[in-house]
Image 1 (cartoon, rainbow, N blue to C red):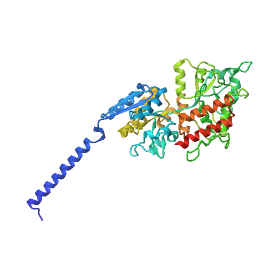
Image 2 (cartoon, one colour):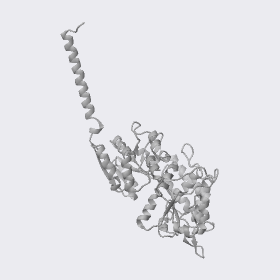
Image 3 (tube, one colour):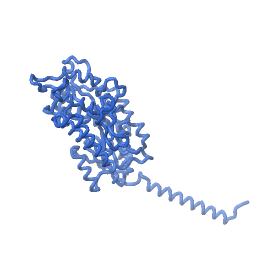
Image 4 (tube, rainbow, N blue to C red):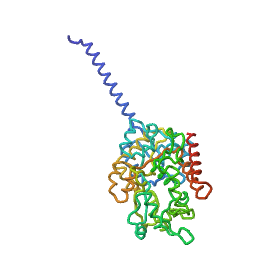
Amino acid sequence: MGLSKKQILILGGGGALVLVLIILIFLNLRSSSPQSQAVTLTVWGFEDRNAFDAILQGYKTLRSNVTISYEKIEENNYESVLLNALASGQGPDVFMIRNRALPREKNKLAPAFPQTFTLLNLQEQFPQVVEQDFVSEGQVYALPLYLDTLALIYNKSVLDQAGIVAPPKTWDEFQKIIPSLRVLSPTGQVLKAGVAIGGSEKTVKNGVDIINLLMLQNGVKMTDDGNTAATFASRGSGLGGLGAFDFYLQFANAGSPYYTWNESQPNSLESFASGKAAMILGYQKNLTEMRNKNPFLKASIAPVPQPSGSETVVSYADYVGLAASKQSLASNWGWDFIIYATTNLDIQKAYLQTTGHPPALRSFIAEALSKPELGVFAKQALTARSWYQADDVKIKEILNSAILSVITGQAAPDKALRQAEDQVSQLMRRR
């Protein structure tokens, strides 16, 4: 049956109305789409601006509606300046965070939106340690810009002169070559150290990190299952926490056959750079720092030693990531920037070439494995492990105090470590 003229007019009018509504909805969506919103992001870090130039320029090309300002804060003052800015509500939208800082910074951070970056995305693109450091209760709170690890830095010429063919692969080998490398005076003074190890952070750069490494390598359970108390002081199976602590301290014990260091020595980086130490345990950033001071520095790199007979290789990482502030009114854009800065292959390549940092992305780690020096750090990124630190800054101070109390004769190793464990547990109970 045919439609009347009136029915045709009604249907036509209804269709036109629907078409108008569709157009209005489309225009409204277009005007409110993320790409059309004018956004300003403030990013804070302690790296030079030139390290971020490629990231900032690339992101501006991708997101023409976003204006980004990068502000460098001096690294020594970074934590206090950032804390004060966030406390006053004047903090940045995106800022750098150290890899063990999540527990103390979590209440200041906005996690990634599940629809933009998931735990599975992180696991696919980054090594396991990143999940240990930057994930809490299944939520991603930061992404790494790079991933540095402790390695054995040694003077090949000195080892050659001592008849040592290759750097030590195990801690047993490490101990055995000390007498061949150190030089003691007739009165027992250290004239030349075999290795800078055994002292406090005053003289041994990364001393606390080395103790953490030794404990993790020996399977020490650092905290209880609920992260409510520290448990690293027990002997446990194998070397145990106390055994790892004793192992570290022996190198600064004048009564030990492996004595090679004391608190009267210069800083370990200075000692190595000046030829007063044959080996140190350091990060790639430490190597860069020494080479900047001494372009003629003779330094070779080897993987960090492992326990003899261990089937599991464990290394220790130090790196920074980018996180979005909880205070930011544009945390969604902050995360858009973070994902771009840390996962875009072209941008990450430019960043790594500018900074010289070891890579964090698995795809770049694979490429770096065959490179003579960078390959050591890249491979160790895959075996790096971490542990929950309620306050990484205070825990470092606590463990450093434990070292000092032993080497100054104020406490026996077991008492010093138990006291440190109690202090760390108190920190954890406050969380």
